[in-house]
Image (spheres, rainbow, N blue to C red):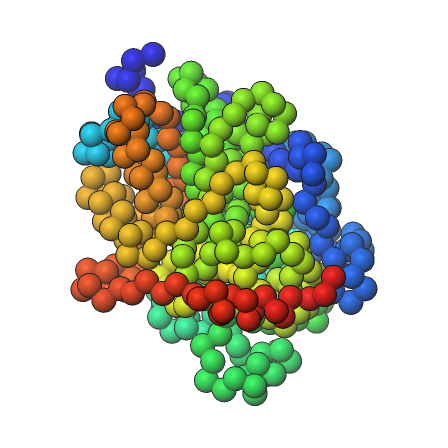
Length: 456
Ligand SMILES: *Cc1c(COP(=O)(O)O)cnc(C)c1O
């Protein structure tokens, strides 16, 4: 098929949209290691999981056999408000780069939360509602997850309590107000409202907080409040499952035009957008039906895959969550305050960690200023102002397209454009003013936080 027959934006008809989420784990020979109870060090049971999580979500979390989970009708109808998201053929970018490569990006920023996180937020809120709960608690770092969850909760009439990392709470007042507009209560973390918050404040007066600390507070409140459970926006298997809608739509759109992806690229924080985007491609790879190069891109300031260790670790600072086996920098690792807030997590999805360990995908890390150069280039050529997180994938997609220019290969490069950057203008300001720095942790620093890994 010749180029000009492929539209700038490939949309799917409603009838072509995914009807079920795909669970990659069902096709993995080496399953991701189970979550462990931090007290007994035994695999978490459904009963134990259900203390913290909604029951249906706990079931999804533990299920590594069921290949497809039907998407409930209510969730499909919510998806229809903002999905399918477009798969864009980046004709302008290709031309500007002078590359023979064909570049496609799946754009998840076309909803008020501005990112892919809404795909799982609505699913998690739905199962909470179905269980008859009053509300949910969660943490948010940069604010995208909290925003997405607030939207989903207000749609379903659930209460939503968000613990927001204090430095973001102060630096991103607009995100906070979006959440409040959707009816959520937003508390800066660490706070005086929980035992773990008070403890952390006593030990580290003046701390600006961290994701791990906000998680501990949100879990404490969920466990201690009748009718509430805790929900999480990334890392967990259930989140990757819901996010598979990204990859399934992408694959369906490519298949519609007979396009076979060669390289699939995504940014990796906790791994949910990447896990979702690659799901059907990885499925074919696992079943031996097709091969793809799959690349995870992380910041050099928080390099879990590329410099972390594959080991059991705590998911939160307060050590109340189950232990997960993952590529980790240690739960004590506090990444430098870089501008890709959504990628500043010490660990990585256990599913992606196993796939990476098995050599089924690659990982690379990039410096912050390089990422913003790519973001600026992309904004000027393709029009969309990308989120800093998403721009990690843009950077590597451009690099791969430039390699094709050298070799003359017309590869099909697909990347995930997870969101827009309108709430990240301080970051763009720092870049535009030439005041952005590239902090890269030393080996000693990483080794020091890895020393504190739990002995499992
Ligand atoms: C949260 C976020 C990410 C990173 O999270 P993953 O779980 O790794 O996908 C990436 N991009 C955007 C826009 C985000 O909001």
